[in-house]
Amino acid sequence: MKHYKSQLALIVALAVSLGVSLCSSSIDDYYLDIMLNVGINVILAVSLNLVNGHTGQFSLGHAAFMAVGAYGSSIVTLEMGAAMIRVFGGSSWFAEGLTFLIALCVGGLCAALCGWIVGVPSLRLRGDYLAIVTLGFNEIIRVVLQNTSGDGPFGGALGLKGIEPYTNFFWVFATAAIAIYTISALVNSTYGRGFLAVRDDEIAGESMGVNTVRYKVIAFVTGSFFAGLAGGLYAHLRTTISPEGFNFLKSVDVVVMVILGGMGSTVGVILAAVVLTVLNEFLRDFEQYRMIVFSLLLIVMMIVRPQGLLPATVFQRRKQA
Amino acid sequence: MSQFLQQLLNGLFLGSIYALIALGYTMVYGVLRFINFAHGDVFMLGAFTGLYVNKLLAPVLAALPWPVAILIVLVLSMAICAALGILIEWLAYRPLRDKPRLNVLITAIGVSLLIEYTGQLVFGATQRPFPAIIPKVNVGGLGGLTVTMTQVIVAVTAVALMIGLRFIVMKTKMGMAMRALSLNPTASSLMGVNNSVVISFTFGLGSALAAAGGILYASLYPSIEPFMGILPGLKAFVAAVLGGIGNIPGAALGGLIIGVTETLVAGYSDVLGIPSGYRDGVAFVILILILLFKPSGLLGKVEREKV
Image 1 (spheres, rainbow over the protein chains, first blue to last red):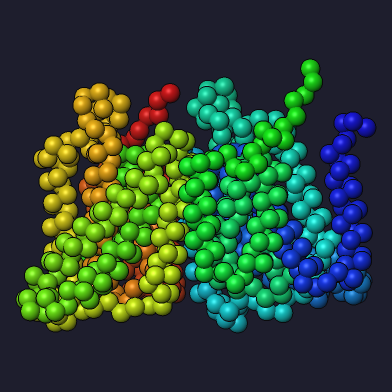
Image 2: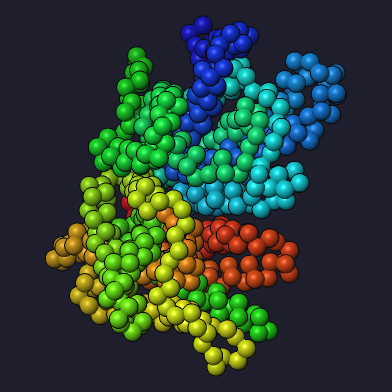
Protein backbone atom coordinates (compact mmCIF):
# COMPACT_ATOMS: atom_id res chain seq x y z
CA MET A 1 0.00 0.00 0.00
CA LYS A 2 2.85 2.33 0.77
CA HIS A 3 3.69 2.81 -2.86
CA TYR A 4 0.22 3.90 -3.85
CA LYS A 5 -0.16 6.73 -1.36
CA SER A 6 -0.48 9.50 -3.94
CA GLN A 7 -2.86 7.50 -6.12
CA LEU A 8 -4.97 6.84 -3.06
CA ALA A 9 -4.96 10.54 -2.23
CA LEU A 10 -6.14 11.28 -5.75
CA ILE A 11 -9.04 8.83 -5.48
CA VAL A 12 -10.03 10.22 -2.09
CA ALA A 13 -9.92 13.77 -3.47
CA LEU A 14 -12.11 12.79 -6.43
CA ALA A 15 -14.59 11.04 -4.12
CA VAL A 16 -14.73 13.99 -1.75
CA SER A 17 -15.28 16.48 -4.58
CA LEU A 18 -18.08 14.28 -5.93
CA GLY A 19 -19.59 14.06 -2.45
CA VAL A 20 -19.47 17.81 -1.87
CA SER A 21 -20.79 18.41 -5.36
CA LEU A 22 -23.91 16.31 -4.63
CA CYS A 23 -24.79 18.48 -1.65
CA SER A 24 -23.50 21.74 -3.18
CA SER A 25 -27.04 23.09 -3.49
CA SER A 26 -27.06 23.60 0.28
CA ILE A 27 -23.98 25.86 0.10
CA ASP A 28 -24.58 29.60 -0.22
CA ASP A 29 -24.23 30.62 -3.90
CA TYR A 30 -21.76 33.40 -3.15
CA TYR A 31 -19.41 31.16 -1.20
CA LEU A 32 -19.78 28.37 -3.75
CA ASP A 33 -18.74 30.83 -6.46
CA ILE A 34 -15.66 31.85 -4.47
CA MET A 35 -14.80 28.19 -3.92
CA LEU A 36 -15.05 27.41 -7.63
CA ASN A 37 -12.86 30.44 -8.38
CA VAL A 38 -10.35 29.16 -5.87
CA GLY A 39 -10.32 25.79 -7.60
CA ILE A 40 -9.78 27.26 -11.04
CA ASN A 41 -6.99 29.49 -9.77
CA VAL A 42 -5.36 26.50 -8.08
CA ILE A 43 -5.28 24.69 -11.44
CA LEU A 44 -3.80 27.76 -13.11
CA ALA A 45 -1.20 28.35 -10.41
CA VAL A 46 -0.10 24.72 -10.19
CA SER A 47 0.26 24.43 -13.95
CA LEU A 48 2.21 27.67 -14.21
CA ASN A 49 4.38 26.49 -11.34
CA LEU A 50 5.46 23.56 -13.50
CA VAL A 51 6.89 26.00 -16.05
CA ASN A 52 8.02 28.91 -13.88
CA GLY A 53 8.89 27.02 -10.74
CA HIS A 54 10.06 23.51 -11.46
CA THR A 55 11.59 24.14 -14.87
CA GLY A 56 12.86 27.66 -14.17
CA GLN A 57 11.46 29.19 -17.37
CA PHE A 58 9.30 32.26 -17.29
CA SER A 59 5.91 32.32 -18.96
CA LEU A 60 3.89 35.52 -18.85
CA GLY A 61 0.98 34.41 -21.00
CA HIS A 62 -0.90 31.87 -18.96
CA ALA A 63 -4.16 33.75 -19.57
CA ALA A 64 -3.67 33.31 -23.30
CA PHE A 65 -3.71 29.52 -22.98
CA MET A 66 -6.67 29.85 -20.68
CA ALA A 67 -8.39 31.86 -23.39
CA VAL A 68 -7.65 29.22 -26.01
CA GLY A 69 -9.09 26.54 -23.74
CA ALA A 70 -12.13 28.65 -22.90
CA TYR A 71 -12.94 29.44 -26.52
CA GLY A 72 -12.14 25.91 -27.71
CA SER A 73 -14.41 24.20 -25.22
CA SER A 74 -17.19 26.80 -25.48
CA ILE A 75 -17.28 26.48 -29.24
CA VAL A 76 -17.59 22.71 -28.87
CA THR A 77 -20.52 22.95 -26.46
CA LEU A 78 -22.20 25.83 -28.32
CA GLU A 79 -21.88 24.49 -31.85
CA MET A 80 -21.97 20.75 -31.31
CA GLY A 81 -23.27 20.34 -27.76
CA ALA A 82 -26.88 19.66 -28.70
CA ALA A 83 -25.93 17.14 -31.37
CA MET A 84 -23.53 15.37 -29.04
CA ILE A 85 -26.10 15.08 -26.26
CA ARG A 86 -28.51 13.53 -28.77
CA VAL A 87 -25.88 10.98 -29.83
CA PHE A 88 -25.21 10.08 -26.20
CA GLY A 89 -28.87 9.25 -25.69
CA GLY A 90 -30.71 12.45 -24.88
CA SER A 91 -30.51 14.91 -22.04
CA SER A 92 -29.21 13.20 -18.94
CA TRP A 93 -26.42 13.89 -16.45
CA PHE A 94 -24.35 11.27 -18.24
CA ALA A 95 -24.72 12.76 -21.72
CA GLU A 96 -24.10 16.30 -20.49
CA GLY A 97 -21.11 15.21 -18.46
CA LEU A 98 -19.61 13.34 -21.39
CA THR A 99 -20.16 16.32 -23.69
CA PHE A 100 -18.52 18.63 -21.17
CA LEU A 101 -15.62 16.23 -20.73
CA ILE A 102 -15.02 16.11 -24.48
CA ALA A 103 -15.31 19.90 -24.72
CA LEU A 104 -12.83 20.38 -21.88
CA CYS A 105 -10.37 17.99 -23.49
CA VAL A 106 -10.69 19.74 -26.85
CA GLY A 107 -10.01 23.08 -25.14
CA GLY A 108 -7.05 21.67 -23.27
CA LEU A 109 -5.59 20.10 -26.41
CA CYS A 110 -6.00 23.34 -28.38
CA ALA A 111 -4.16 25.17 -25.62
CA ALA A 112 -1.44 22.51 -25.60
CA LEU A 113 -1.06 22.84 -29.37
CA CYS A 114 -0.70 26.62 -29.02
CA GLY A 115 1.82 26.04 -26.25
CA TRP A 116 3.81 23.81 -28.56
CA ILE A 117 3.73 26.35 -31.40
CA VAL A 118 4.82 29.18 -29.10
CA GLY A 119 7.21 27.10 -27.04
CA VAL A 120 9.32 25.39 -29.67
CA PRO A 121 10.89 28.54 -31.19
CA SER A 122 11.36 30.37 -27.92
CA LEU A 123 12.49 27.47 -25.72
CA ARG A 124 15.34 26.52 -28.04
CA LEU A 125 17.07 29.66 -26.85
CA ARG A 126 18.39 30.53 -23.45
CA GLY A 127 17.42 33.64 -21.64
CA ASP A 128 14.26 35.58 -21.36
CA TYR A 129 12.77 35.02 -24.79
CA LEU A 130 9.92 32.87 -23.49
CA ALA A 131 8.76 35.73 -21.27
CA ILE A 132 8.53 38.20 -24.11
CA VAL A 133 7.07 35.71 -26.59
CA THR A 134 4.36 34.61 -24.18
CA LEU A 135 3.63 38.23 -23.29
CA GLY A 136 3.31 38.97 -26.99
CA PHE A 137 1.16 35.87 -27.52
CA ASN A 138 -1.15 37.07 -24.77
CA GLU A 139 -1.66 40.38 -26.57
CA ILE A 140 -2.03 38.74 -29.97
CA ILE A 141 -4.67 36.25 -28.88
CA ARG A 142 -6.68 39.14 -27.53
CA VAL A 143 -6.25 41.23 -30.69
CA VAL A 144 -7.10 38.29 -32.97
CA LEU A 145 -10.20 37.34 -30.99
CA GLN A 146 -11.39 40.94 -30.89
CA ASN A 147 -11.08 41.25 -34.64
CA THR A 148 -13.07 38.14 -35.47
CA SER A 149 -16.50 38.78 -36.95
CA GLY A 150 -19.28 39.28 -34.44
CA ASP A 151 -21.55 36.57 -35.84
CA GLY A 152 -18.81 33.97 -36.42
CA PRO A 153 -18.02 31.16 -33.98
CA PHE A 154 -15.63 33.43 -32.00
CA GLY A 155 -18.12 36.20 -31.43
CA GLY A 156 -15.77 39.15 -32.01
CA ALA A 157 -15.08 41.79 -29.36
CA LEU A 158 -18.23 40.96 -27.40
CA GLY A 159 -17.21 37.35 -26.97
CA LEU A 160 -19.44 34.33 -26.51
CA LYS A 161 -22.72 34.27 -24.61
CA GLY A 162 -25.12 31.61 -23.46
CA ILE A 163 -22.56 28.93 -22.67
CA GLU A 164 -24.17 26.06 -20.74
CA PRO A 165 -23.32 26.31 -17.01
CA TYR A 166 -21.88 22.81 -16.78
CA THR A 167 -19.11 23.67 -14.33
CA ASN A 168 -19.85 22.54 -10.79
CA PHE A 169 -17.92 21.66 -7.70
CA PHE A 170 -17.05 18.17 -8.90
CA TRP A 171 -15.60 19.25 -12.27
CA VAL A 172 -13.46 22.03 -10.79
CA PHE A 173 -12.02 20.10 -7.89
CA ALA A 174 -11.65 16.85 -9.79
CA THR A 175 -9.64 18.69 -12.43
CA ALA A 176 -7.64 20.44 -9.73
CA ALA A 177 -6.90 17.10 -8.05
CA ILE A 178 -5.88 15.54 -11.36
CA ALA A 179 -3.71 18.56 -12.20
CA ILE A 180 -1.97 18.43 -8.83
CA TYR A 181 -1.52 14.67 -9.05
CA THR A 182 -0.24 14.69 -12.63
CA ILE A 183 2.19 17.53 -12.05
CA SER A 184 3.50 16.09 -8.77
CA ALA A 185 3.94 12.70 -10.42
CA LEU A 186 5.69 14.32 -13.36
CA VAL A 187 8.01 16.29 -11.09
CA ASN A 188 8.90 13.20 -9.04
CA SER A 189 9.68 11.10 -12.11
CA THR A 190 12.62 11.00 -14.51
CA TYR A 191 11.03 13.98 -16.23
CA GLY A 192 11.15 15.88 -12.99
CA ARG A 193 14.88 15.31 -12.73
CA GLY A 194 15.13 16.72 -16.24
CA PHE A 195 13.10 19.80 -15.24
CA LEU A 196 15.28 20.37 -12.20
CA ALA A 197 18.42 19.97 -14.30
CA VAL A 198 17.15 22.65 -16.67
CA ARG A 199 16.33 24.96 -13.80
CA ASP A 200 19.47 24.53 -11.74
CA ASP A 201 22.10 24.56 -14.47
CA GLU A 202 21.21 24.21 -18.10
CA ILE A 203 24.79 23.90 -19.32
CA ALA A 204 25.69 21.24 -16.77
CA GLY A 205 22.47 19.36 -17.53
CA GLU A 206 23.15 19.47 -21.24
CA SER A 207 26.68 18.15 -20.82
CA MET A 208 25.26 15.24 -18.80
CA GLY A 209 23.15 14.28 -21.78
CA VAL A 210 19.85 15.87 -20.72
CA ASN A 211 17.89 17.05 -23.75
CA THR A 212 17.03 20.40 -22.16
CA VAL A 213 14.87 21.67 -25.01
CA ARG A 214 12.71 18.55 -24.88
CA TYR A 215 12.12 18.88 -21.14
CA LYS A 216 11.35 22.57 -21.42
CA VAL A 217 8.82 21.92 -24.18
CA ILE A 218 7.22 19.05 -22.23
CA ALA A 219 6.82 21.24 -19.16
CA PHE A 220 5.46 24.13 -21.16
CA VAL A 221 2.97 22.06 -23.18
CA THR A 222 1.71 20.28 -20.04
CA GLY A 223 1.31 23.62 -18.30
CA SER A 224 -0.60 25.01 -21.27
CA PHE A 225 -2.88 21.97 -21.36
CA PHE A 226 -3.98 22.46 -17.77
CA ALA A 227 -4.39 26.19 -18.33
CA GLY A 228 -6.69 25.27 -21.19
CA LEU A 229 -8.73 23.01 -18.92
CA ALA A 230 -8.99 25.83 -16.39
CA GLY A 231 -10.15 28.11 -19.18
CA GLY A 232 -12.87 25.64 -20.18
CA LEU A 233 -14.07 25.39 -16.59
CA TYR A 234 -14.04 29.17 -16.28
CA ALA A 235 -16.08 29.62 -19.46
CA HIS A 236 -18.73 27.12 -18.35
CA LEU A 237 -18.87 28.71 -14.92
CA ARG A 238 -19.30 32.32 -16.09
CA THR A 239 -21.39 31.35 -19.19
CA THR A 240 -20.08 34.44 -21.00
CA ILE A 241 -16.50 35.05 -22.08
CA SER A 242 -14.90 37.96 -23.90
CA PRO A 243 -11.36 38.58 -25.15
CA GLU A 244 -10.84 41.32 -22.53
CA GLY A 245 -11.28 38.78 -19.73
CA PHE A 246 -8.03 37.06 -20.65
CA ASN A 247 -5.71 40.04 -20.73
CA PHE A 248 -2.19 40.35 -19.45
CA LEU A 249 -3.38 41.15 -15.93
CA LYS A 250 -4.97 37.74 -15.58
CA SER A 251 -1.56 36.26 -16.39
CA VAL A 252 0.06 38.51 -13.82
CA ASP A 253 -2.40 37.34 -11.18
CA VAL A 254 -1.22 33.78 -11.69
CA VAL A 255 2.44 34.78 -11.74
CA VAL A 256 1.98 36.57 -8.42
CA MET A 257 0.43 33.43 -6.92
CA VAL A 258 3.40 31.33 -8.02
CA ILE A 259 5.99 33.79 -6.78
CA LEU A 260 4.27 34.42 -3.48
CA GLY A 261 3.85 30.72 -2.79
CA GLY A 262 7.39 29.91 -3.73
CA MET A 263 8.49 28.86 -7.19
CA GLY A 264 8.73 25.08 -7.31
CA SER A 265 6.72 24.51 -4.15
CA THR A 266 3.38 22.91 -5.01
CA VAL A 267 1.90 23.25 -1.51
CA GLY A 268 3.03 26.87 -1.25
CA VAL A 269 1.55 27.73 -4.63
CA ILE A 270 -1.80 26.10 -3.80
CA LEU A 271 -1.99 28.02 -0.54
CA ALA A 272 -1.07 31.27 -2.29
CA ALA A 273 -3.78 30.66 -4.91
CA VAL A 274 -6.39 30.07 -2.21
CA VAL A 275 -5.38 33.07 -0.10
CA LEU A 276 -5.06 35.50 -3.00
CA THR A 277 -8.37 34.51 -4.57
CA VAL A 278 -10.21 34.92 -1.29
CA LEU A 279 -8.44 38.22 -0.55
CA ASN A 280 -9.29 39.52 -4.01
CA GLU A 281 -12.90 38.78 -3.34
CA PHE A 282 -13.01 40.57 0.01
CA LEU A 283 -10.92 43.56 -1.07
CA ARG A 284 -13.04 44.47 -4.08
CA ASP A 285 -13.44 48.02 -2.75
CA PHE A 286 -9.73 48.65 -3.16
CA GLU A 287 -9.64 47.47 -6.76
CA GLN A 288 -7.58 50.42 -8.05
CA TYR A 289 -4.80 49.78 -5.54
CA ARG A 290 -4.72 46.04 -6.13
CA MET A 291 -2.24 46.05 -9.02
CA ILE A 292 0.00 48.58 -7.28
CA VAL A 293 0.18 46.28 -4.27
CA PHE A 294 0.78 43.25 -6.50
CA SER A 295 3.60 44.94 -8.39
CA LEU A 296 5.25 46.17 -5.20
CA LEU A 297 4.89 42.65 -3.85
CA LEU A 298 6.76 41.28 -6.87
CA ILE A 299 9.63 43.74 -6.46
CA VAL A 300 9.93 43.38 -2.70
CA MET A 301 9.67 39.58 -2.82
CA MET A 302 12.48 39.35 -5.35
CA ILE A 303 14.75 41.58 -3.29
CA VAL A 304 13.91 40.26 0.17
CA ARG A 305 12.68 36.70 -0.21
CA PRO A 306 13.04 35.34 -3.73
CA GLN A 307 12.29 31.77 -2.69
CA GLY A 308 8.69 32.67 -1.81
CA LEU A 309 6.82 32.60 1.48
CA LEU A 310 6.59 28.80 1.60
CA PRO A 311 9.58 27.46 -0.33
CA ALA A 312 9.72 23.83 -1.44
CA THR A 313 12.32 22.85 1.16
CA VAL A 314 9.86 23.37 4.01
CA PHE A 315 7.72 20.51 2.78
CA GLN A 316 10.47 18.25 1.56
CA ARG A 317 10.86 15.11 3.58
CA ARG A 318 14.17 13.39 3.39
CA LYS A 319 13.88 9.79 2.32
CA GLN A 320 15.34 7.43 4.84
CA ALA A 321 18.23 5.48 3.43
CA MET B 1 3.03 53.67 -56.79
CA SER B 2 2.67 56.97 -55.01
CA GLN B 3 0.44 55.28 -52.45
CA PHE B 4 3.19 52.75 -51.83
CA LEU B 5 5.79 55.50 -51.40
CA GLN B 6 3.46 57.33 -49.04
CA GLN B 7 2.98 54.21 -46.91
CA LEU B 8 6.71 53.56 -46.96
CA LEU B 9 7.39 57.08 -45.77
CA ASN B 10 4.78 56.85 -42.98
CA GLY B 11 6.35 53.55 -41.96
CA LEU B 12 9.78 55.11 -41.75
CA PHE B 13 8.52 57.87 -39.47
CA LEU B 14 6.87 55.37 -37.15
CA GLY B 15 9.91 53.11 -37.40
CA SER B 16 12.28 55.86 -36.32
CA ILE B 17 10.35 56.13 -33.06
CA TYR B 18 10.48 52.35 -32.54
CA ALA B 19 14.20 52.62 -33.22
CA LEU B 20 14.63 55.19 -30.43
CA ILE B 21 12.93 52.88 -27.92
CA ALA B 22 14.74 49.81 -29.21
CA LEU B 23 18.09 51.52 -28.60
CA GLY B 24 17.32 51.67 -24.88
CA TYR B 25 16.44 47.96 -24.76
CA THR B 26 19.55 46.99 -26.61
CA MET B 27 21.92 49.17 -24.55
CA VAL B 28 20.60 47.87 -21.24
CA TYR B 29 20.82 44.32 -22.56
CA GLY B 30 24.37 45.04 -23.64
CA VAL B 31 25.58 46.05 -20.18
CA LEU B 32 23.32 44.00 -17.88
CA ARG B 33 22.17 41.08 -20.07
CA PHE B 34 18.54 41.45 -19.12
CA ILE B 35 15.37 42.78 -20.72
CA ASN B 36 14.21 45.93 -19.03
CA PHE B 37 10.48 45.38 -19.17
CA ALA B 38 9.84 48.81 -17.70
CA HIS B 39 11.36 50.52 -20.74
CA GLY B 40 8.02 50.85 -22.53
CA ASP B 41 6.64 52.57 -19.45
CA VAL B 42 9.48 55.06 -19.38
CA PHE B 43 8.36 55.84 -22.93
CA MET B 44 4.87 56.51 -21.56
CA LEU B 45 6.30 58.65 -18.75
CA GLY B 46 8.20 60.62 -21.40
CA ALA B 47 4.96 61.53 -23.13
CA PHE B 48 3.33 62.57 -19.83
CA THR B 49 6.36 64.61 -18.71
CA GLY B 50 6.20 66.32 -22.08
CA LEU B 51 2.55 67.12 -21.43
CA TYR B 52 3.18 68.53 -17.98
CA VAL B 53 6.34 70.44 -18.91
CA ASN B 54 4.39 72.02 -21.74
CA LYS B 55 1.56 72.94 -19.37
CA LEU B 56 3.84 74.38 -16.68
CA LEU B 57 5.96 76.43 -19.04
CA ALA B 58 3.09 77.46 -21.31
CA PRO B 59 3.49 81.23 -20.76
CA VAL B 60 7.23 81.08 -21.40
CA LEU B 61 6.95 78.76 -24.37
CA ALA B 62 4.25 80.80 -26.07
CA ALA B 63 6.65 83.73 -26.34
CA LEU B 64 9.35 81.64 -28.03
CA PRO B 65 9.39 80.48 -31.65
CA TRP B 66 8.05 76.92 -31.87
CA PRO B 67 11.31 75.11 -32.72
CA VAL B 68 12.90 76.47 -29.55
CA ALA B 69 9.82 75.55 -27.53
CA ILE B 70 9.97 71.97 -28.78
CA LEU B 71 13.64 71.76 -28.00
CA ILE B 72 13.03 72.96 -24.42
CA VAL B 73 10.18 70.51 -23.83
CA LEU B 74 12.19 67.69 -25.34
CA VAL B 75 15.38 68.35 -23.40
CA LEU B 76 13.60 68.90 -20.06
CA SER B 77 11.52 65.74 -20.39
CA MET B 78 14.53 63.74 -21.44
CA ALA B 79 16.45 64.96 -18.41
CA ILE B 80 13.57 64.13 -16.04
CA CYS B 81 13.13 60.66 -17.51
CA ALA B 82 16.86 60.00 -17.43
CA ALA B 83 16.78 60.75 -13.71
CA LEU B 84 13.79 58.43 -13.33
CA GLY B 85 15.58 55.68 -15.21
CA ILE B 86 18.61 55.98 -12.96
CA LEU B 87 16.33 55.94 -9.92
CA ILE B 88 14.57 52.78 -11.11
CA GLU B 89 17.87 51.03 -11.65
CA TRP B 90 19.15 52.14 -8.25
CA LEU B 91 16.04 51.09 -6.32
CA ALA B 92 14.93 47.93 -8.08
CA TYR B 93 17.71 46.41 -10.13
CA ARG B 94 20.89 47.25 -8.20
CA PRO B 95 20.04 45.08 -5.15
CA LEU B 96 19.72 42.14 -7.54
CA ARG B 97 22.97 42.66 -9.45
CA ASP B 98 24.41 39.21 -8.62
CA LYS B 99 21.13 37.31 -8.33
CA PRO B 100 19.76 34.88 -10.96
CA ARG B 101 18.45 36.49 -14.11
CA LEU B 102 14.93 35.24 -13.53
CA ASN B 103 14.68 37.31 -10.34
CA VAL B 104 15.72 40.46 -12.16
CA LEU B 105 13.19 39.73 -14.90
CA ILE B 106 10.37 39.35 -12.37
CA THR B 107 11.42 42.60 -10.71
CA ALA B 108 11.37 44.32 -14.08
CA ILE B 109 7.81 43.15 -14.66
CA GLY B 110 6.93 44.41 -11.18
CA VAL B 111 8.44 47.81 -11.95
CA SER B 112 6.59 47.97 -15.24
CA LEU B 113 3.22 47.24 -13.59
CA LEU B 114 3.98 49.64 -10.75
CA ILE B 115 4.64 52.49 -13.19
CA GLU B 116 1.50 51.70 -15.20
CA TYR B 117 -0.87 51.53 -12.26
CA THR B 118 0.65 54.41 -10.35
CA GLY B 119 0.33 56.31 -13.62
CA GLN B 120 -3.32 55.34 -13.83
CA LEU B 121 -3.88 56.63 -10.31
CA VAL B 122 -1.96 59.88 -10.85
CA PHE B 123 -2.75 60.74 -14.48
CA GLY B 124 -6.20 59.14 -14.64
CA ALA B 125 -7.21 56.22 -16.81
CA THR B 126 -8.78 58.21 -19.63
CA GLN B 127 -7.12 59.24 -22.87
CA ARG B 128 -5.56 62.71 -22.67
CA PRO B 129 -4.99 64.97 -25.68
CA PHE B 130 -1.36 65.82 -26.29
CA PRO B 131 -0.78 69.54 -27.06
CA ALA B 132 0.19 70.37 -30.63
CA ILE B 133 3.60 71.84 -30.02
CA ILE B 134 4.46 71.43 -33.68
CA PRO B 135 2.31 73.50 -36.09
CA LYS B 136 0.04 71.38 -38.28
CA VAL B 137 1.20 72.28 -41.76
CA ASN B 138 2.08 70.17 -44.72
CA VAL B 139 5.54 70.33 -46.17
CA GLY B 140 5.36 70.57 -49.96
CA GLY B 141 7.86 69.92 -52.71
CA LEU B 142 7.91 66.12 -52.57
CA GLY B 143 5.85 65.24 -55.62
CA GLY B 144 2.45 63.84 -54.76
CA LEU B 145 3.41 62.85 -51.21
CA THR B 146 1.95 64.44 -48.11
CA VAL B 147 4.40 65.01 -45.31
CA THR B 148 3.40 66.97 -42.25
CA MET B 149 5.71 69.20 -40.27
CA THR B 150 5.29 66.80 -37.32
CA GLN B 151 6.66 63.94 -39.37
CA VAL B 152 9.65 65.99 -40.48
CA ILE B 153 10.41 66.97 -36.89
CA VAL B 154 10.06 63.34 -35.80
CA ALA B 155 12.51 62.15 -38.43
CA VAL B 156 15.01 64.96 -37.83
CA THR B 157 14.96 64.53 -34.04
CA ALA B 158 15.27 60.75 -34.25
CA VAL B 159 18.21 60.91 -36.64
CA ALA B 160 19.92 63.62 -34.58
CA LEU B 161 19.50 61.58 -31.39
CA MET B 162 20.86 58.47 -33.04
CA ILE B 163 23.90 60.33 -34.34
CA GLY B 164 24.39 61.79 -30.85
CA LEU B 165 24.18 58.31 -29.34
CA ARG B 166 26.65 56.95 -31.87
CA PHE B 167 29.02 59.76 -30.89
CA ILE B 168 28.65 59.06 -27.16
CA VAL B 169 29.18 55.33 -27.57
CA MET B 170 32.08 55.46 -30.01
CA LYS B 171 33.97 58.66 -29.16
CA THR B 172 33.64 59.41 -25.48
CA LYS B 173 35.30 57.81 -22.49
CA MET B 174 31.95 56.79 -21.03
CA GLY B 175 31.01 55.12 -24.31
CA MET B 176 34.24 53.20 -24.31
CA ALA B 177 33.49 52.07 -20.75
CA MET B 178 30.02 50.95 -21.88
CA ARG B 179 31.49 48.89 -24.69
CA ALA B 180 34.09 47.40 -22.36
CA LEU B 181 31.41 46.47 -19.82
CA SER B 182 29.22 44.77 -22.40
CA LEU B 183 32.23 42.78 -23.63
CA ASN B 184 33.32 41.55 -20.22
CA PRO B 185 32.17 43.04 -16.90
CA THR B 186 34.92 41.50 -14.78
CA ALA B 187 37.73 42.56 -17.06
CA SER B 188 36.36 46.08 -17.41
CA SER B 189 36.20 46.56 -13.65
CA LEU B 190 39.76 45.23 -13.38
CA MET B 191 40.78 47.90 -15.87
CA GLY B 192 39.42 50.59 -13.56
CA VAL B 193 35.94 51.06 -15.00
CA ASN B 194 33.38 51.84 -12.32
CA ASN B 195 30.72 49.41 -13.51
CA SER B 196 27.93 50.84 -11.33
CA VAL B 197 28.39 54.33 -12.73
CA VAL B 198 28.42 53.01 -16.27
CA ILE B 199 25.24 51.01 -15.69
CA SER B 200 23.50 54.07 -14.21
CA PHE B 201 24.64 56.13 -17.16
CA THR B 202 23.32 53.52 -19.59
CA PHE B 203 19.93 53.51 -17.90
CA GLY B 204 19.86 57.30 -17.98
CA LEU B 205 20.77 57.40 -21.65
CA GLY B 206 18.25 54.72 -22.62
CA SER B 207 15.47 56.38 -20.63
CA ALA B 208 16.22 59.77 -22.21
CA LEU B 209 15.88 58.22 -25.67
CA ALA B 210 12.65 56.51 -24.64
CA ALA B 211 11.30 59.84 -23.35
CA ALA B 212 12.15 61.51 -26.66
CA GLY B 213 10.41 58.61 -28.40
CA GLY B 214 7.37 59.14 -26.17
CA ILE B 215 7.07 62.82 -27.03
CA LEU B 216 7.54 62.20 -30.74
CA TYR B 217 4.99 59.36 -30.69
CA ALA B 218 2.53 61.56 -28.81
CA SER B 219 3.04 64.28 -31.43
CA LEU B 220 2.22 61.83 -34.22
CA TYR B 221 -0.72 60.21 -32.40
CA PRO B 222 -1.85 62.96 -30.02
CA SER B 223 -3.72 61.00 -27.38
CA ILE B 224 -1.90 59.54 -24.41
CA GLU B 225 -2.84 57.19 -21.57
CA PRO B 226 -0.94 55.28 -18.87
CA PHE B 227 -0.91 52.02 -20.85
CA MET B 228 0.27 53.47 -24.14
CA GLY B 229 3.77 52.11 -23.57
CA ILE B 230 2.98 48.41 -23.67
CA LEU B 231 2.56 47.80 -27.40
CA PRO B 232 5.25 50.20 -28.69
CA GLY B 233 7.56 48.76 -26.02
CA LEU B 234 6.87 45.22 -27.17
CA LYS B 235 7.40 46.15 -30.81
CA ALA B 236 10.60 47.99 -29.98
CA PHE B 237 11.84 44.92 -28.16
CA VAL B 238 11.13 42.86 -31.27
CA ALA B 239 13.06 45.48 -33.23
CA ALA B 240 16.02 45.09 -30.89
CA VAL B 241 15.94 41.29 -31.30
CA LEU B 242 15.53 41.62 -35.06
CA GLY B 243 18.64 43.79 -35.30
CA GLY B 244 20.56 41.57 -32.90
CA ILE B 245 20.08 42.35 -29.23
CA GLY B 246 23.01 44.30 -27.78
CA ASN B 247 23.84 45.73 -31.20
CA ILE B 248 23.15 49.48 -31.46
CA PRO B 249 22.97 50.00 -35.26
CA GLY B 250 20.96 46.77 -35.38
CA ALA B 251 18.30 48.23 -33.06
CA ALA B 252 17.90 51.26 -35.31
CA LEU B 253 17.63 49.08 -38.41
CA GLY B 254 15.18 46.72 -36.69
CA GLY B 255 13.00 49.65 -35.62
CA LEU B 256 12.74 50.93 -39.17
CA ILE B 257 11.94 47.46 -40.55
CA ILE B 258 9.19 46.89 -37.98
CA GLY B 259 7.69 50.35 -38.57
CA VAL B 260 7.64 49.91 -42.36
CA THR B 261 6.28 46.34 -42.29
CA GLU B 262 3.55 47.27 -39.86
CA THR B 263 2.43 50.32 -41.85
CA LEU B 264 2.46 48.39 -45.13
CA VAL B 265 0.41 45.55 -43.66
CA ALA B 266 -2.13 48.03 -42.29
CA GLY B 267 -2.17 50.08 -45.51
CA TYR B 268 -2.65 47.08 -47.80
CA SER B 269 -4.88 45.12 -45.46
CA ASP B 270 -7.72 44.78 -48.00
CA VAL B 271 -5.29 43.61 -50.71
CA LEU B 272 -3.74 41.07 -48.36
CA GLY B 273 -7.14 40.06 -47.04
CA ILE B 274 -6.40 40.52 -43.36
CA PRO B 275 -8.18 43.01 -41.09
CA SER B 276 -6.11 46.11 -40.34
CA GLY B 277 -6.64 45.40 -36.66
CA TYR B 278 -4.02 42.69 -37.04
CA ARG B 279 -1.25 45.26 -37.54
CA ASP B 280 -0.22 44.74 -33.93
CA GLY B 281 0.36 41.08 -34.68
CA VAL B 282 2.97 41.80 -37.35
CA ALA B 283 5.79 42.38 -34.90
CA PHE B 284 4.92 39.18 -33.10
CA VAL B 285 5.04 37.08 -36.28
CA ILE B 286 8.40 38.66 -37.10
CA LEU B 287 9.64 37.78 -33.61
CA ILE B 288 8.67 34.11 -34.00
CA LEU B 289 10.32 33.97 -37.42
CA ILE B 290 13.61 35.46 -36.16
CA LEU B 291 13.68 33.15 -33.16
CA LEU B 292 13.18 30.20 -35.51
CA PHE B 293 15.63 31.12 -38.24
CA LYS B 294 18.17 33.64 -36.97
CA PRO B 295 18.04 34.09 -33.19
CA SER B 296 21.18 36.22 -33.20
CA GLY B 297 19.41 38.86 -35.29
CA LEU B 298 20.35 40.56 -38.54
CA LEU B 299 23.51 42.29 -37.34
CA GLY B 300 24.20 40.40 -34.12
CA LYS B 301 27.08 38.11 -33.52
CA VAL B 302 26.51 34.54 -32.36
CA GLU B 303 27.43 34.45 -28.72
CA ARG B 304 29.05 31.39 -27.25
CA GLU B 305 27.92 30.66 -23.75
CA LYS B 306 30.88 29.94 -21.52
CA VAL B 307 30.77 27.85 -18.38
